[in-house]
Image (tube, rainbow, N blue to C red; front, side, top):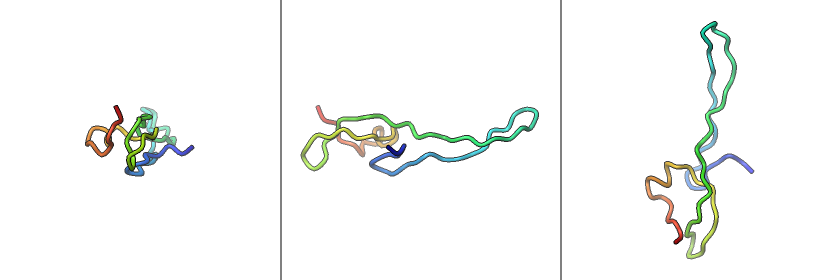
Length: 63
């Protein structure tokens, strides 16, 4: 299962960690995904959604 938001498609971003001794290594910035019961096309489904989509009301939560 991919670490991807099912609404906006946000995926992990890549960057570098640099220590004080200037040792450089790769790292990943993971999206903050939550499992949410949402209304999609009139039915209730569990989807993995990033918190930005939840806060901006792109997801209609099921009761």
